[in-house]
Image (cartoon, rainbow, N blue to C red; front, side, top):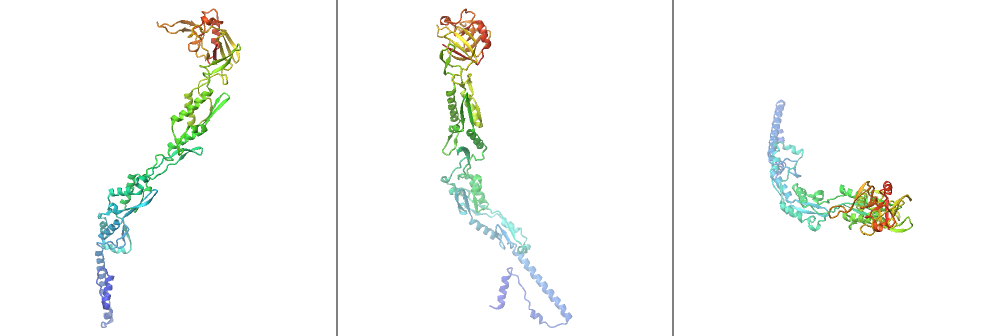
Length: 511
């Protein structure tokens, strides 16, 4: 091949637009006949002008050719979605985008599982042209092609892709993180008793997927052509514990349970005390294998009830038999069915519940339904009324001294329903005057109607009152002519007793 041919091929490689160049033989020009200097200068300018005009024509034609070339191709330096689109047609760019889509895959990261991959071919993932690339090409002004040599233009188009959502759902369900055997459900936070105190055991996360939410996260990532998706980044993609360590209700429960441990009730029974504190209360609580408190209000109340019943059994005196030393020296045993100490168990149970719930640390007496004058072996004390039914005489002691005494007539011993019962009682009413009436008979009238000046009942319908129809008192009158059960007194003595008797003074009746 000749040198000229080689040079021509070289020029064609360097000229991608196919422009023709004219070669001037400078030596030949230099060999032109000499002319005069003035004529020579004139010719020189003329030649220079011709050359310049020819160069301008060549450049104009070249620029126009390049503009035409770029009328259907992207300028140099054009990048679309990371693809170098320089000198490529819209079709070529879309073909390259489509080739990228064909190789699409997404790596799915999940909690407590190794990442797994879903391939585009598994979900029929493909590119659909929507003309956006061509629209970008048409935005170019071809005559501005030279700008591409000096600056880059980066564009982003939406990858108009399509995939089969049913296949995607099946792919998600086939992942290890979705399989039923791999679903570990979260556990709620709870209060447990550990190391001699209550504390909150935090919730656990688990690995149980919320399939619908996980699908939405995966679908969004694929729609955006993301190459990875971390399901753990979406807190709603997994089932969450219903109760967390920050739960206001749980923290209130913790406070309430700590109150159980902190509560302390010191009961006083005269010189004796009983202490109910956390060491006992904790034994009333049930815990499961994890130390979680199993709340059962019924069982808890039953424990309190048992405790209060134990206090009552130990310290209640109502209904118990006491030794009593009579004025005449006799020692008798008397039961106090209506006198003594008696804890109001229902009220005390509720009070204990309140004290425990508030974490109270108190010293107090229990709530009583009935109280006596004092504590001790005999709770009668030294202020009382002694009614000796065998000797038909009574004494009123105040602080150990007799302030009143009198003969009386008690219930008729000839009738079992009229005998005055023994026991310890207290006055519950006073009235002056009063009409005493017996039981209502079949004819609708009372068995008797007796007006009295002073009426002091202490045992139902039995009480002290004056009996002006009697001339004698004491002795053995009660054996054959006794009352219907009341203690009959002389009028004057009844008046004195009415003035001095107090409601809380024990009245001891015995034979």
